[in-house]
Length: 120
Image (cartoon, rainbow, N blue to C red; front, side):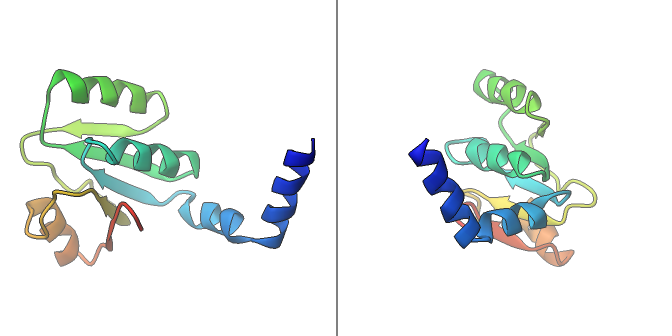
């Protein structure tokens, strides 16, 4: 009981969580990479109301399993040798290992779509 009250007080004092959720709701976000950090990023974004598409170049058993889990949360997953920027993307969240010259990231930059790291 006291823990819930403390949480409620923190949220009332700090409007960032509610404001963040409002900014993410309906945003079309592409998360590239289904390694270590991509799936958690996709889960958080989907839970905050973003329309998430996760992409990866590896179409293997591990990524197919992750794709199934994410699909249950409403996340679309595309596994193809050369990941593409989904049409209408508002934001790209990149995971470690993707170089800026990667076709998807270069396409996003050329289209004026913001690209941020997963830590951001």
